[in-house]
Length: 214
Image (tube, rainbow, N blue to C red):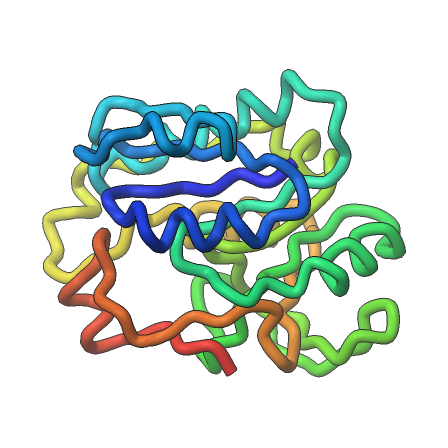
């Protein structure tokens, strides 16, 4: 199952959907574009707009869909990841045993959010780095989501009293995986492309902290 989180980027969304080998699920945060052209391309869910302060509710909506399915493979994507290496993603998923969360993007960031020291590892023959975080675009299995009870933590409004702050999804999920001993990885070479285009959710933050694929 592939789930794409989207907001007001219809042209990028079309490109991401067009890469998917199977019909994805799109969770749209109340965009103002016409959804009808997307209906035949994906399962399109338009929710009420919540913005980054309540983005965690969209993730819970996604986890509820995952829980109700019989799937074992779950890929979560933003609507701006391109050139996705689905062959390597499916190879890794089919061979990794046990719980895991594997990010698609290597943006060169240092240790954040948990106490795990980054170290280079081989994951089923793929050059990877075990990292301290899981953030936004990653794949995992049912065993992992069962371990967190298919639950996204509530993000309190007090977080957003600070300027240039992110939604908190990556931080909350990373800490939950870390506490449960679930390893988190990134590839040494990104499994997708992410460029310097403007962020819809974090425009000011991403000017200072761009996420560029390596």
